[in-house]
Image (cartoon, rainbow, N blue to C red; front, side, top):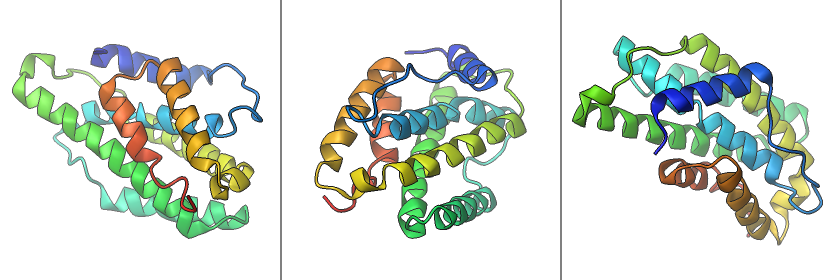
Length: 188
């Protein structure tokens, strides 16, 4: 299991450097970019949870959720894709992220010695999240035919498997990725 410090450092470094996964041929793995960005967004859960733990904040933030859903809905509309579909996908993403945060809080409750003593500023994490959100909506627009097509589930499963391996996601994050991407293939 990854240590919190390693996860925070990896997420922060990837965000700071703009590092993405190696380039892939979209025709072979059309949902890779979307699923990989969803995974990167999920990886912000540890630094966000650490900040909330240290500051005594609540995991759930309805005002922030509304802000995110409104922004992605507007972005979807501007890109000519179904805003309701995009909002549903982001609701799943947010619930998966909250699930990781609740898990971390539980772990830190059971073993206070593993609780974080430092965390990046929440504004820094939210800036990264907002960037991931824009990328995800752009990927949804670019892959709208795949997402609505008969092979969506196969493409999604392939992309999940590759991203879990590439990002070396532990079982918690692999499960969260499954949950975050659960509504990507509504037609199948």
